[in-house]
Image (cartoon, rainbow, N blue to C red):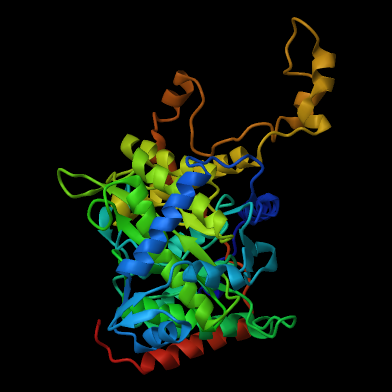
Length: 523
């Protein structure tokens, strides 16, 4: 018997309160925007000569040093047929070749489709999309401390991302559910995004077959909406992260996933993952040059496989402690790399991915706050289009924090207001208020203030701006304690977006059949 059938009926008052809460959430969701359209200028740190110099140096890497494409004869054959110099697994591209391939066919902006069309996102141009953090094997909460992540954590973070109006995307591997076998966990992760959220999501990249499973599950989810009738090609319903094995190497796993998604017309974010000083030179210009060269090679390969396929130039660059070898975050040098790479992506007419709320802090403390702010603000000023790791990142990406997640989502909401710029409408100019109040009075009770007070300023759900006495009377709670209460309340009030039962059954049937084909080992 269903649990709902055995549970006693709720008192009318409780039912009414719950309905009111749900109605409030629906109203709040209707006020949210599916993505940001920036209305402030871009911040750049290099002039035309500086950017052209880095482009020339990147072409020198591609032409003279080359990029390795390991254990993938097909990719090597594609490069050779296109006119590259292929020696074993090393590919050298003629100067300007990658840029020409990209600019000949790659879209400068594209739509990623969600199962709820109101949640579609525009990636590229003046738009910014916030997605959660990605890839952590551990989770941290105030209640349990640090532990390995499981599938329930994964579902929780999908739900939190769905409920966060400042996040536009469900993300991908929000955390690694280590309680599930490696060769099967991708099914549960992709299904969780499809079941518990109606926002856009990312696909599996840890094996070509897992990428293919993601595509097949997306076909089931979107049904007749999978194919674009105008082009005859699949709509772009999946975005996936393809990391370069820096320095200057693509491995078979990433190449396999790249080929699956490119041929299915699904977008890839090609991102060199660099810890400067270990995986690239210690200088900003050297790291940007290597990042551009590595990304160009992967992006050009996508266009060789499927001209016109949407894609994103990605950059993830962190500095390194020269004393301990540990990655550092929130420092000036990676911010400079980010600004440079954003400008280089615009010169290629490509969407750009970088940034987030990155930190090396182990808990959501002051270090976490200032390092995250020092990565999120440059992200927004530089014009990043797809922001991975917006919420939850701790410990250099090793841990996904529950409290950190809602803290970061709160900060992302502030960035919405910043990027919206200055309102110069008649209401924004507020001359009526100034005329009404006149010299020597206050604006608290004037008509303009009363008409705008609910939306006039960003209101944090977590910050305490009350008096000391009120704060003390309410339990002297710090930000982490308030965040702990916030994420628990969100999960308690979570209501899943509707999913057609026939689609749900088809997804479960596909997963069960595919899982049965795998051995029960954890490899």
